[in-house]
Amino acid sequence: MKRISHKLIIWMVTSIFICLPIANAAEQGSDKKSSTTVIAEQKTVNSKAKAEEDNPKLETSVMDNLTLLSSTYKIYKEDNKTGEFCVQVEKQSFFSPTFFDESYYIYLFDLDSYRKDPIVFSKKQMPYIEVYHQNNKTSILFDDNFFVRENSIFIKLNKDTLEKAYNADKIFLNVYTSTGAIVRYELPKKVSSQWEFVINKDVKKAKR
Image (cartoon, rainbow, N blue to C red; front, side):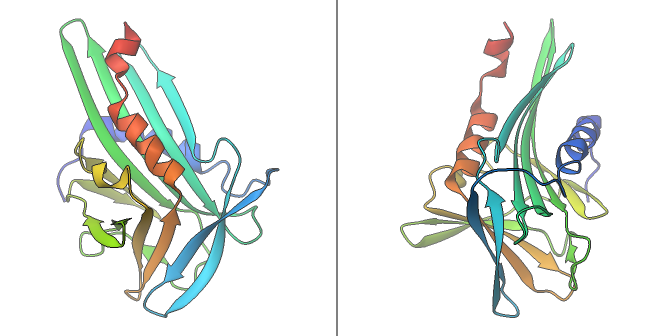
C-alpha cells in the first residue's frame, strides 16, 4: 500500500461526515431499485436507492485555497430507511497565486454493520467496477494507492480512471466479503454522469 498524501486525509474527514449522518435517516420520496447480487452464493437481494433529486448528490465546498467537488450516492436496504452502502467520487482543487493542482478519489463505505458475511477491503480484495457497452464488458481496476479504515476504503484515482463508465449502458460496483463472495451493486446512469461532471468540471475557471 502506497503512502497517502495529506490531501487524502482532508478528503477522508469530509467524506465521513457526508455518508454517516444519513445512513439510518428516514426520508420521504419515491423508490428506485438498485440491484445487489452476492455472486458466490448465487443469491440476489434487492436493495433500494432513494430517487430524490439529491441521490446521487453533488456538493461543493470552498475554502481559502481548496475547492472540494463531490458526487455521493447512497444505497438503502429494503425498508428504504437504513443505509447499506455509500459511494463517493471527489475532486480536490488546490489554488495559490503560483500553483494549481487537482487530485481525484473514490470513497466506498459499508454502512451495514450487521452483515453475516461482512464486506472487506484490502490489496488482495480490492473493489472494482464492471461496465457494459452493448453487452461488451470492461473492468475498471484501481491502483494500489489507497487507505483502508474500518468499513471503508479511500482510493486515489487518475483523471481517466472512470472514463469508461461515463457512457456505459450498465455499471456495477463489485466488493468482496470475508468469505470471498462478491457483492454486486448496480449503479444508475445518473451516478456516472455526475462522476464525469466532477472529474471534468473546470473548477479553476469557476474560481476566477
